[in-house]
Amino acid sequence: MIKLRNLDFRLPSGFALNIDSLEIREGEVFAVIGPNGAGKTTLLNILALLQEAKPGALEIGGSDALAPSSRTRLRRSMAYLFSRPYLVNDTVYSNVELPLRFRGERDSGQVAEMLEVFKIGYLRDRNATQLSQGERHRVSMARAFVTRPRLVLLDEPFSSLDARAKEAIIGDLRRITRAAKTTVVLVTQDQEEALALADVLAVIKGGRLLQQGKPQEIFARPASKEVADFVGVETLLDGEVKAKSDNLCSVSVGPATLEVASECAVGDKVLLCVRPEAVSVSKAPEANSMRNHFRGKIVSMEPWRLEYRLSVDCGFNLIAAVTKRSLDEMGLKPGDEVFASFKATAAHLIRR
Image (tube, rainbow, N blue to C red; front, side, top):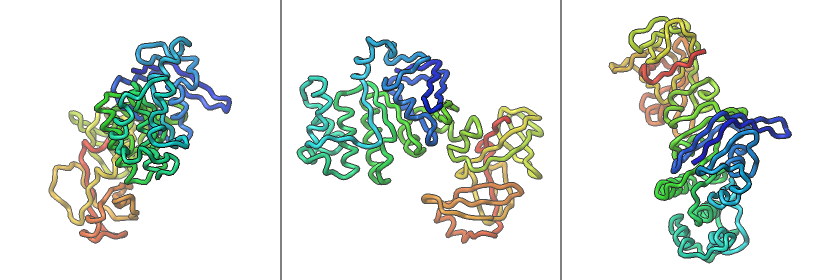
């Protein structure tokens, strides 16, 4: 659906967006995550043909998107949703119908269909500017999909919503994009949004595309420290591969030796990564299949969403995620001695 090549886009501020190659397949939900100022919205504006990708090459739907003869037609085949739902002072029906009127098309049932899909049929005759934030977002979504676009671009579309409204709208959006096989490009800082929607994930920082692939692969196997930091890998340890048997590496981290399944070679200097949810914590040593077992002491514990993050001193600092229920059952507190373990396949090595 989208092919972008050799992009070296520069803004007057000095910011540069450099992407050698980017491909998004038809019917795919492609999420771009990264911190503020990474270049996410600039990339989206280029794909929306609001900013010109020169030098560079951009194809959308097999057409040269930089050719003046293609721009109007391609823009009519896409919809762009901003972080705020910009609605006109009119009824919900009129707002959803608006793209059809702009195109000189009559409503042949599309408006009623979208009102039903996004569960706002009961709001049809209400003034759109007097709705709740969640309802306004649903109207904006319905308006975006009423023309049955081939490509939908979403710029932080859920940032102003509370968690409950966000979860419901993401569920509806996921259902309609799958059913309609619409190509979607989503840019967000929220990793949970990206994981909930994306088929493919890309991490961008400082105008550079650092990694792209399946979301689970990026979160479990970050390609660099920058990616690991952003996707929530909290245990990052400097080490060296001292021995290897088949694909099982023995990695020296200070006084400890950790076992990690990896393609790295003996002598490689590495950064060892372990996600907090991959670490198991117990009050007594447990017999299990995990290759890495360490005795340690809880240094600190902090609430994090519905879990607690425990910092455990095992001769190296290991971060573990523990549910509130497990914390209460074990009666854990700072200073307690615990046993931490994780699988060799749960850790990941990045060559330094």
